[in-house]
Image: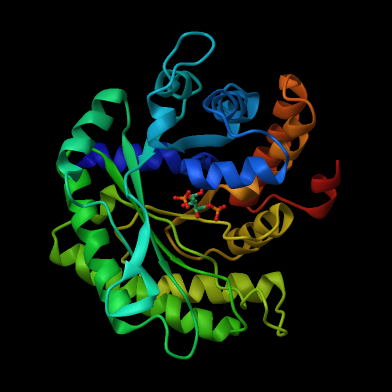
Amino acid sequence: MSELNNIALKILSNGKGILAADESTGTMTKRLKAVNVESTQENRLLFRETLFSSEGMKKCIGGVILYDETIKQNSISKKTIPELISSSGAVPGIKVDTGAKILASSPNEKITEGLDGLRERLKEYYKLGARFTKWRAVYIISNDYPSKLSIYANAHALARYSALVQENGMVPIVEPEVLMDGEHSAEECFNKTSEVIKKCYEELIKHKVDLKGTILKPNMILPGSSSKNNIDSKKIAELTLKCLKGSVPSEVPGIAFLSGGQSEQEAAKNLNSINLINDTNFIMTYSYGRALQQSALKFWSKDIKNIKGTQDTFNHRAKMCSLASQGKWSEDIEKK
Ligand code: 5MM
């Protein structure tokens, strides 16, 4: 079991974090369409491979979450994608849920599926080189939501998933994402996120998951994206730390936040504020999708052959996130 703890620490330590490049084909198509690039298998691979072979990968990325399509592809240099990632010193990971579907009996909410046949798929992913995995549950906030049913059902699925992943020698990332959409206040986000995370650990413990061999991927505590009550970064950091201290067992080695729709700069600034006042033993780092890739994708879309320019753009973002994970980010450095 200490081997799983070592994998988790390798992914999260030394100012490193996770690149979430696990967009399903549907989501990746949306992202590419938004920048007027055709979503072909070649283009999806080219963009991802450009990031995976950058300098920023070596210095700032401890793990990459892949999607089923990507983990089975080969790079231009003929290495498999997991080999390419490992050669930069990062750990290859894989998204293993099959998506969030309507929750029966509460049709406004979602339950994440993918448990059927999971044991067999995990064995295949292990052979392909994956050493950690991801499963994302999503929750909405409003007066009635998330319901007790969705909180329980998703926690149960996350626990069954985590136990199976550890059985197969990999580290599960537990991702309960309380979405930013809505007019709710940061206090409401705090209350609902705390309830969601506590239930996740109640179920993980029931399913005998070794918490030392897991990583938590939560949202930060923010006001809803349509809320008029903005709060500053320091307050976001205080609420986020208070929530995690009250709901995450101390055995968990590290926490890698999702960006959840924050801009690249907000995601760096807020992570930095968290690390400036982090008085826990948890490593607090990033597992960003959009907040690591957005500007690189924009740059690349204008000239998909400009590998160096795309990598430079990504290297800067990765460096900003890495500095933020150590409380060393600043607006001045950001502008350089
Ligand atoms: C990379 O985006 C993932 C989306 O997966 P689907 O295509 O299945 O919707 C997502 O799970 C992502 O890993 C996390 O939400 C973190 O990404 P952001 O952009 O929120 O940092």
